Length: 171
Image (cartoon, rainbow, N blue to C red; front, top):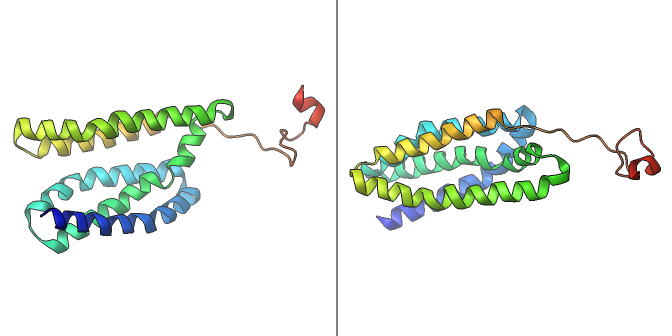
């Protein structure tokens, strides 16, 4: 029922809220890109159970699967700001992150539900939708592996790169 799904999503959202800070911290400890890749791989693995559990009718399994899915999704959201900020040089970082994040959100986040619905209606099967989700996870992992990661130069307390005085930094 719709109420069951809404309740399961609400509980799962609380799980994600709590987990996001933890996986962001984990990203700082073991590597942001690594944590996001683990999260994407877990989403791909859980894609089929996430949809197939709905037919089981088990309230417990639906709540559990939704919560676990949101837990692993937190691994993609928690460290993503740091991952994105390191993809661009400081001179163009703010605009670049905004364009990349908002553009991708509009295209993939906006069109995915429509495409998924059309695929389901055209085939009568949930498997093409599952394949789409897995494909997007694989594409994201490949993109992350090849994405540039820029490291900012260390600066002194004046904001100038270390080793430079104010006069040579402003020249």
